Length: 174
Image (cartoon, rainbow, N blue to C red):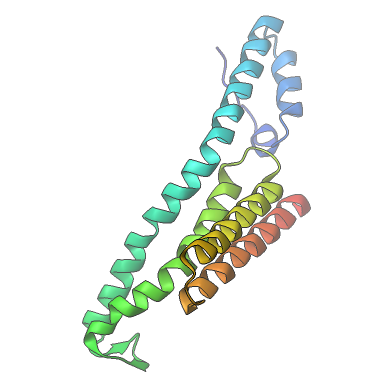
């Protein structure tokens, strides 16, 4: 089978329309073109299936760099966080506990934005709504007071939606 992308014009084309046109002009048979279309359809289906699990896994994995950044910032900075906040040496756990939802939420939304093959901003909106619904349901069923980390979680999901909106706007302009 021939190279799928043989020019810069087709590499940058996300719709695939020019790509199929050029592939057909190169002399591939209709059967080969149909195989390529089937492959792309299967790939898109698998990407849609991976949106939610991929977003959840990415959100979880983002806690590791956050932990190490905070740990190193506290341990090598002495009793200050990044040299300007005076804290108790054991407070990095409290800071990590508070900041973690703010980091997980936008990672969850933005990863879904990147994984989705089409309708990226709508996918981000759905993931943000799922995040907010899960936060509200946890609040209702566990009937706790609203804590700072819960508010940061909601703000993080809205920040992720805003960044996704800006990215989609930039993609449509270019």
